[in-house]
Image (tube, rainbow, N blue to C red; front, side, top):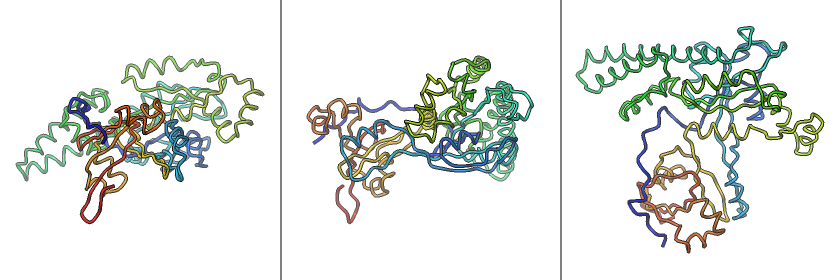
Length: 379
């Protein structure tokens, strides 16, 4: 029998995650969206080519999954993927689409090209950052003031203490936004976060900044806009910045490996690192998603859950019966399996553990769930 985890091994309690999270992340430029999803979404050379959302499921590169497939040689493989949507534009329709997603890829133009128009006629990424940031804050302020009015009407009809708590929080959020700060950077209490997550505020969503440079700048690792972008981001929360070249990625995205190598050689490209996989994985982590695995000769599969998910709820992603009749989770760490080479070696090494209902599933856990529901047996 696997050893049971001691109470001292329990993961430390974490603050609730701000904002609603599922499996969808939003990105704001279609050349990039097309590269990631292999779709042909309109991406014409004029502003607001489309503001309608497009959705797709995207493969998330994960070397652990590939390694498990090599080890178990399963009959079936279910690779990791997540949802993505793309929209381009400003205005109410654009902003309403963002409210429905969980994270934002903010793609910044950091190249000059007379053939590609810019809505402001000049290229200035920091100005664009300020513009978008202000638009999102103004929309959140509008939403919160409407919420405040609704609460005040309800408070006249009811003495519910919860209404007063929400009213006070709304006033704090409005003051925070009007001071020029995004909601995700506020120092909110746990109780505040639980309420804030029901609002789906635009500035509560995590952001990854993608700096789209020319192929030349990307290859030589120099860009005149990048230092200013970096300084601005550090002053405004210090979130992740990933430089890349959409033109370069687009050239190589659909090429077979031999053609890609030939293209790089002909164009004297020395940096052959394609960044799209890194962008996808960073976006996946930014919205607090992780994977656990189930692995056997029958099937190796990734299961997507939100960070901080406990074992019974993780089991529920496989089947509701797993959560309803949860008994325990038998867990081994991917790193332990890779180091020791086999499941039997992990067990004999004392690293195959039996976890209960309070166990918080960690990224890369390989889990076998035991459950029992009325009319059924153990699994």
